[in-house]
Amino acid sequence: MTDTTKRLPLATPRLRSSSFLVLALIASVVAIVGSSWVLGAYTSGLLVESFLFAIVALTTDVIWGYGGILTFASAAMFGIGAYALGIMIVHVSASGWAIAGSVAAAAAVSAALSALIGWLAFYSRTRVSEFYVAVVTLGLSVLFGQMVLYGGALTGGSNGLSGFPTVSLSNQTWYLITGAALLVTGGVALKVVHSDFGLLLRALRDHELRCKYLGIPTPFVKTAVFTACNAVIAVVGVFYALFTTVVAPSLVGIVLATNVLIWVTLGGRATIIGPALAAILVNAATPQLSTLIPLYWQGILGLAFVLVVVLLPRGILPAMWTLLLHLLSRLISPVRTGPDGPSPASKLYEVMDSASFVPGSEIVLDIQDVSKKYGSFRALSEVSLQVRLGELVSIVGPNGAGKTSLVRCVSDGMERNSGAIAVCGQSIGRSAPDAIVALGMGRKFQGASVFGTLTVEESLKLATWKGRLPRLWGRDPRLFLPLEAAEVVNALGLKAVWNVPARDISHGQRQALELAMVLALQPKALILDEPTAGLSSAERTLIGDLLVRLVAAGRLAVILIEHDFEFVKRISSRIVVLVNGRLLADGTVEEISDSKLVREAYLGRPASGTEQ
Image (cartoon, rainbow, N blue to C red; front, side):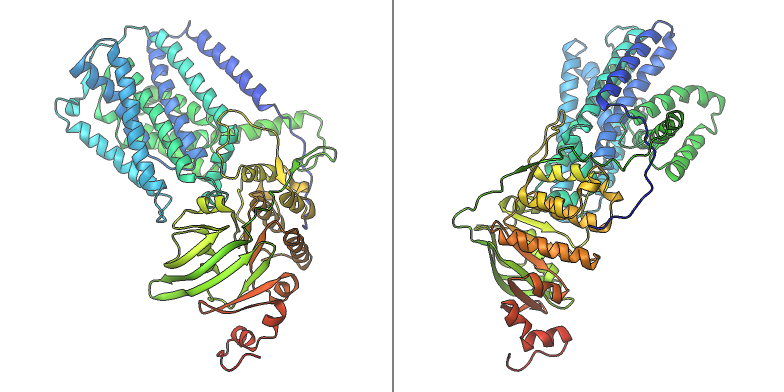
C-alpha cells in the first residue's frame, strides 16, 4: 500500500514496563513506610481516607478508562459496602465475624446488582446509547442515596449510623494497611491492563462493533469487568466504614459519584496511577482548602476540571509524562529513528497452516427466501442465494438495491424478518454476530473498521484469538498468523507500520489491516463491503489480485459488495445483481455483462422485455 513520507522523530528514552513498575513499587513502599514514622495522627487519618478513595478511583478507571463504560455506580457500590458494615454491627452483631460477613455481603450484593445492570445494558440485542449505563447508574446512585436517607432506624436516616464499635487500631497502623492495599490493588490493576486481557479491553473501548465481528463475546467481557470492579469498590466501602465508624447519606450520593469521575479525568483516563494520585491529592487538600477558601474551593475544583477537559483531554499525568520524556530527550544525544518499525532481521510472526477443507462444507453460505423491512419499506424480498467454497461472488446493484441490508442479515441473526440463513451448513437462527463468526463467517466493513489505539501487531494478535478470552495475567509475545492473513501483511505493506497505532497509518493501510484481521479468523465465508473504497488504482489492483489468489487456493469463499463494475468483472467467478431488494440476476461474468436487464437496471430504466 502507499505510504506517506514523514519526518522521522527523535528517539526518546524508554524503560521496560516491568522494570518501571518494580521501581515504582519499591519507591512507593519506601515512601509509605518511611512517612508513617513522621506523620501525625490527623494527617495519617486523612491519608487513610485518601488511599481508600484512590482505590475507588483506579478501579473506576479500569471500568471507564480501559473498558469504555461510563459509570456513576461507584457511589452506590461504595455505599453498599459502608452500610453493610454499619447495619451488620449496629443491628446484628459487633463480634469479629461481622466484618467478614459484611465483606461477603457487600461483594455479593454489589456483584449481583452489577450483573443485573450488565444483563440489561450489554446483553440487549436492541442497540442502546453508549450513555445508557451512565444514565442507569446515575439513577442508581440517586436512588440508593434516597433509600438510606429514608431508611428509618435501619440506616439511621439523615443522621446515618455512627459511633459503632470496630477494630481498635491506630491511625498510623491504618495508614500502613490502606497504603499496602492501594499498592496491591494498583499493582494488580496495572498488571491486568498491560496483559493480553488489557489489550482486549482497549479494543473494546476503541471499537466494540469490530470486537463483535472478531468473535469476541463483548457482553460477557463488559459485564464481568463491570461486576468485578464494583465488587472491589463495595469492599473498599466496608473498610471505610470500619475506619471512620461513620456512615451517612452524604457519603453515597451523586456528589461522590461525580467526584470519582473528576479524579479519573484529572489524573488521566487509562493510566491507573493518574486517577489514584488525583484522588489522594484532592482529598488530602480538601480540608485545608475548605477552611482557607470555603466559598470557592468547590468552584476552583470544578474550574480545574473544565480546564483539564478542554486543554489536557488526556489528563494531567499523561501531559506531565510527555513533557518529562521530551526534556529527557533534549538531554540525551538525539538520534533519528524510524516510526517504531521492526528491524529487517526481526521475526514478526509465525505462519501457521491454514485450516484443512472439511468434507460436506462446500456450500459455505446458504440464503433462502430472506426478507427485510424497515417499517413499511421493503429492503429485501425473498432473496435466495448459495455460495460455494472457492467462489468469488460479487453482489452488485444500484444504490438502495439492498446489498448492505443483505450483508446485515447474513452477519446478524436479528436483522432479517423472514427466511433462513446457514453458514457452513449450520443455521444462524437469531444468533449474535460473535456466534456467527464462530460458524465460519468473516465480515469487512465498508469503512476501515480498526482499533485506533492498537498497533498493527496488537490488532492482528487480537484477531488470532478468534473470540477466545486471553490471559488475565501477562502477555504472550508470540503471534501466529494464518497463511491468508500473512499474505495480506506481506503484499499490502503492513510490515512497514508494524508497531504504529492504527489511527496513524494511511487509509489504504487501514483497509489492508482490517482485511488481514478478518482473514486471521480463518473464515470459510468472507464478506467484503466495498474493500477498495477510497483507494488508488494501484491499490485496487493489489487488492483484486490478492482476492483472486485467496479464492484460487480453495480454502474460502468471498462475497464481495462493490460498485465498480469493471473491477467486479475482472476478479469475479459469479455476479449476483440486486435491484429494489430483489434478486434480478445470478450468473457468470459473461452472462451478467451481456444482460440487457442488468444494463437497464444500472441505467435506471425500467427492466422490461426479454433478456438478451
